Length: 117
Image 1 (cartoon, helix red, strand yellow):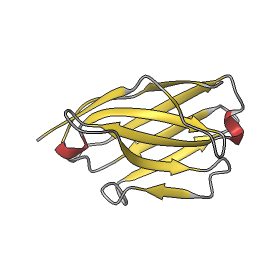
Image 2: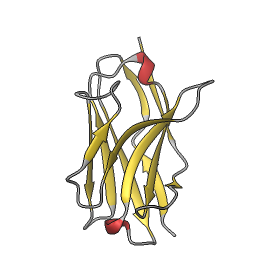
Image 3: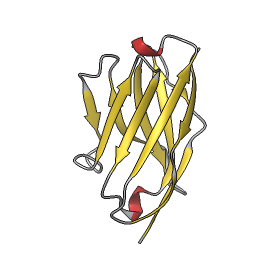
Image 4: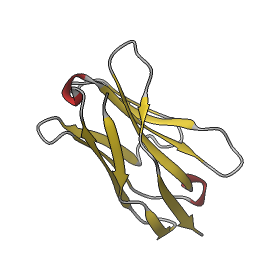
């Protein structure tokens, strides 16, 4: 079972940037798909971006495409989400997730991102 710890959240003005990191331990992270999800206050958790184990299949939510970049470093068991041109509607708790293909996601504890207008 993989354990995931997010870092890098914080408060930023609209138009600014943040870089989230996800450190994985246990399991075989290099063979897992991984993703980022977020949950705004009063809303359900939503998909942000996913990346396959080798890094060559990437998907983004329409709302973040062109502004966010997901990446991973299997040698370091880490994943990242570079967030540029942030908007107030990007505010929420961001969760890192990882899973073997065909299995349910393992989740991190989340990191708060707040974008002020």
